[in-house]
Length: 202
Image (cartoon, rainbow, N blue to C red; front, side, top):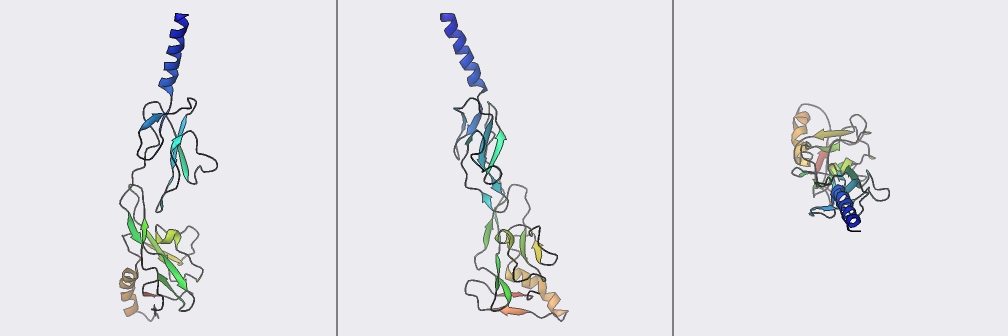
């Protein structure tokens, strides 16, 4: 009888040693999963230029239909948790543009969008180009590169913090204005937008 108890204890210890460890809550430590059959850990997905999705961390696969939407999985082990927070880089600012049907020009919101990124991801902002139509919508509220389906000339990108502000774009376009016959309009009527000097949509 004593020998059987010892064998059972050793078997339990062996299973316990192989149990996957995961982080169960933000800021938590690696914790052995209660489900000893678990091989995965899950955590919130980081969406470039947007930030962490609203998703819990824990043992096992992503719950429901959340995988690759708000949740991501990793293969666990019995020593360290694989679902550790991803390393992020310093956030930056971009501006979100909207089209004004009255003045027929684009203007950006007064308050910039705070853009989040993973470590090593380059800064990028997008804004409407000379060929943008009234249907143009800023990709990710101005954060990151142009949308993949943006037509040629409909969107432009820049690569510094706040580079798609009205002031920055005006400074870039000013030499063009002085050396060409392009006509520009100034939108001063938007109470929730800054003044933006830019080409009318085609």
